[in-house]
Length: 173
Image 1: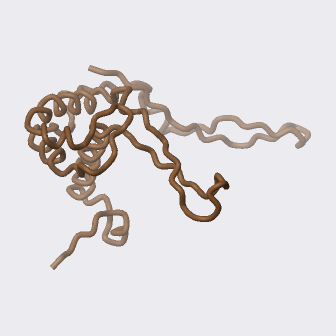
Image 2: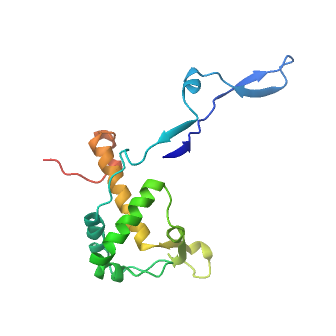
Image 3: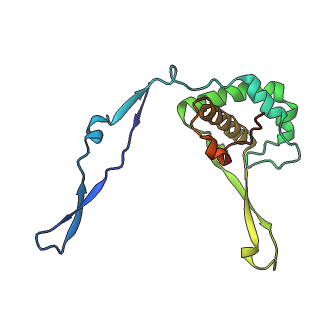
């Protein structure tokens, strides 16, 4: 059981002083704010967290491009792809625990930022764009979470057809 703090924005309204010169803000009274609890109990074992299946992780590992660069953790995509059958199990456990706890391994938060030349004079720093090389296992976890979010949006019809530009292209016959 994990307790999380629910923070809510408090709307403010201007209040004039007697002379009209000094204006200060005070919280508005909102009946909806009084009804919401400050702490909510979440039992993550019984909630709608998707289970990170080993097969999903294995499929993502097989889809890795071995010609991409490794991140700051030094794990090359070729190693993960070639050892997909061995690493899928432990990675799925790490991904599931990370999903449930809301914590990401510290190494996955690091990035090597490399300046990539665009065009113009090479001496001008403005002619370079930064590219972040992040951890490959962290990127795989991001793809799994993105897939879960996309499924949720699709299953619950949250994105309307008029907002199709924000979703993957789906060809309807």
